[in-house]
Length: 483
Image (cartoon, rainbow, N blue to C red; front, side, top):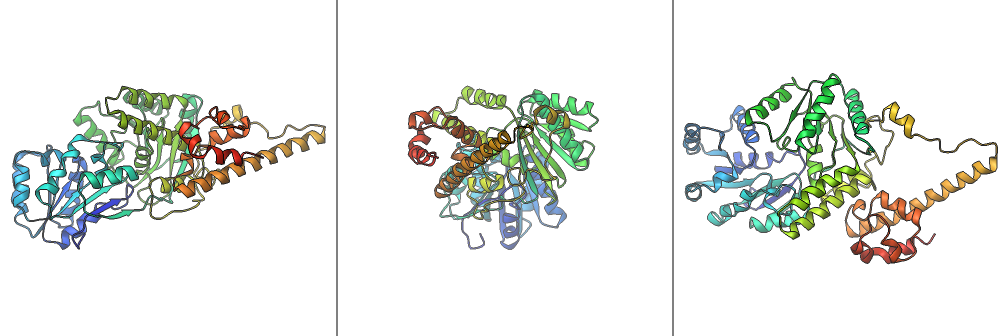
């Protein structure tokens, strides 16, 4: 950036993205213009910079005209200045002409994934930020985001006209986070998991993400009855009420917050010990961004996803009701399929996430997720009530020792077949540089063993194998299944 290059930084929540433009802002004379969609985050960052003695201000709809006038006066008083503004203000009538006249050293676009229609959080006002490059083509641009697939990344580069940007995609591995995914037959199962998790983490804060506004209120009521200091948060509340709840959560008056995804962007609380999803998010990008709020202080924290069959129906309803272009909807269906496959399991959770986002640093196994270490002390266990209902002994004792031996042989055969298919899936995924769950999930793997498909026609009856996948690797898979 100091050499005047465009830069694209894709780093997870808590990865230090703000520092990437704040430090150059101190080293280069002029204005660093930062575009952010989050008023609360802009205010927090300006306050933090001023506390350090760094000239900074913001211009957005949440401050008075008098304050904005003072900010634009201060811009010209200092050698270097960090100015935060919203994408809407960039489009105002006088702002483009102001940009042309100013001594600007850098444009910084935060939450840059919002530019792309292929992303999980597209915002139309972001699509008009092309005016920055058009009005000042000589000024370098840095685009920053916590979540962007290769498709979204390339769309950001193209849309904002980045010139051969330096690309930095890393930091998605968070070794202090324990990823745990559990399929729940009933809502009671979900409640028991969350209650057990809150009992397991009696100190520190917790976020309980819900799929709808009503669910946040339901969960708040349930947790309140169980003695937690809890509140709920969603976009249907007034601005004043949301601000009040945010303050209570920030100051520790509320320990547990049941919220929709309206809460979280820009949240930087150090001691969030558990992030629990009571409904599966619609994309891995959304899921990763939300669990990224856990463990910002570097201490062990748990990310629990308790999902059920109904969760898919909720997202299907939203996609079907969307007025987006068919290509966009197709992409959303694909994103939902990826999320479902991730939830249904494959290889190491962390390794799969790193591959999904094409992190420049990869690992084979983390050794501490629910796949790598099912008995980890960071795991939220099932309650004893649930365990009694579903736990079965592996072998029922019998007087006939031959029967016991036969059962053991069956188990060995099953384990061997499972290993053969897992090994093939792992190698195929590595060859294509995709996470294993995007080949197929563990649910598909189990059906392959149970149904024993022998032809491509048989593969059509296997869960998770569509026409495209059968075309891509059906023959190779069938060769592997000849046990």
